[in-house]
Every structure is written in C-alpha cells, then in structure tokens.
Amino acid sequence: MKKVEIYSTSTCRFCHEAKEFFKANSISFTDYNVASDLEKRKEMISKSGQMGVPVIVIDDKDVIVGFDKLKLADTLGVSM
Image 1 (cartoon, one colour):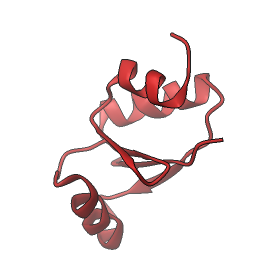
Image 2: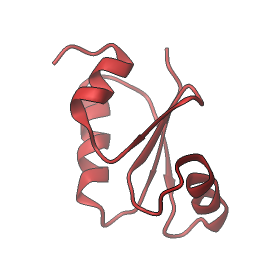
Image 3: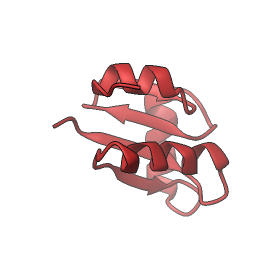
C-alpha cells in the first residue's frame, strides 16, 4: 500500500474532494491541516514550492499540487 499524505485546510473545496476520492477508493491517507500547523505548512512549502492546497505526497516522492483526479488515479493505480 502506498503512503499518501495530504496537506490541506478545512475550507478548501479541492482538499475535501481529494479526501473523498481517497475514501471512495479505500485509500488510507494522513491529513495535515496547514492552516493550524505551522511546521507542516513549512514542510508542504519545502516539498512543493507552493502555498496553495491541496498538496498530495505519495510515497515521499510524487508531489501533486491541486486535485488532479486523473494523475492521482494513475499514480495510485486506481481505475476511473
């Protein structure tokens, strides 16, 4: 099983959509709320070079900025 981490905020619509995608496909993930966790926010910026959310990291190597459903499905081996 792949390690999936999502850097998100509670008010981000695309963050919610990404988490629903994970749940619908039985993909476990770790969620970091970068609105309240300064260290995780710095980590997210370091990994992605971005301030926008969501930032999704798969197996500590694939970094996907935004909710790109097709790229996520391909990277995670999920059929659409």
